[in-house]
Image (cartoon, rainbow, N blue to C red; front, side, top):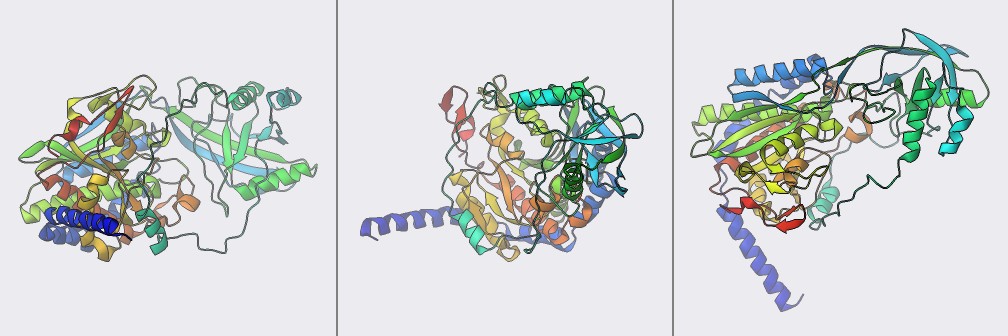
Length: 532
């Protein structure tokens, strides 16, 4: 290492140390937060109501409406202010499963592990028919099946070979994986692509239209992952458009456990007649096609016009009760709000900025609720784009948005989403929680959840790093996404850290640093740079 390099690193260390020293941490407040978050946690009580009682929470469903009423009532009872719903949409029609069963009838009887896809229509009572395998890779291949599918159960997928599990299903981050995150370079922006005119979906579109026109009893598949009776299932497809669109043409559809799907297909391939029965009772709901986000606040004081937001998506899929996805995140954020209320009451210290909790709906269908909120409050967008063309005044008043949506695992740090300016600040805020194993900051981006809606319009939006546990290989979008797979200690730890981050963001003299924002057709500096 030469002298110039050594001097440069020394200057960086001095500057970083200086910035960290200037960033205050209120240890007394953290102690109160720890007491209410760790010693007196209510996370599992919240989660029990959200999942066992008010799960699943499919967007547009009556159960989501009931869960929304419960959440509003609970937040009001705690003392949150300005608790209200904000409408967005149109989303489309809702859907509720009322009864489902599937059985193999021949060559022998067994009950089949399966779940209907959301927005599948009812069958005409119990229906019985033979299994047929549709083997087609090109549009021309469909001609061989014309007139042969009516009254049949159509198998769409190939056999998927499974492997026995010799490693643990659940995993936590270790020192190696955390070091890799910490050493990740600043992310390179990905070019935006327009897939609308690529024509890559022409076969799938033709297949779906063909299947609807042929009127099979149901179309059956198995998911690309999962075994041991775990079924990953989401929404049905329509002949055209989305299954939740009003008057969409949808054939009954179900996803089977891989073991049962494989057995059916193996029997069929042996030339053995396989006959199934199925009954699905479902209803379409939500006639006005509109949906709602849940908003609640703790008012600020001298900087009350500025806001710190924290939230998670409240909706789920329908096969489980939406526990790890995302009852865990919504529980943590509601619990963080409760902790903050108790901390304010005990300490007498009120937040300078307004604290705003948001529970989003429509996340599972494409971040619809959070994107609608951002569009209503913070930016104007060109048609069919998530890149803003202009900013609204309130965009400059949001200091940060904190999100949680990667299962039940404890917080291990923060994805800084390429925002290097927050690194020394977040380092100071994480240091008091080393004993809770939250230590890692990474410049990496992470995707797939609601912080992206805020990041897209230049608001500092962050998702926390979490232990994966068995989220992606067992509970995410599966029939096993239930209360039993929540970890109490992890939820309490996460809520405690979130509450501290929200409080300290609210008390800063300045808003959090912002990245430059790429606007539609041009590149400008973010309008929220004042107060940096």
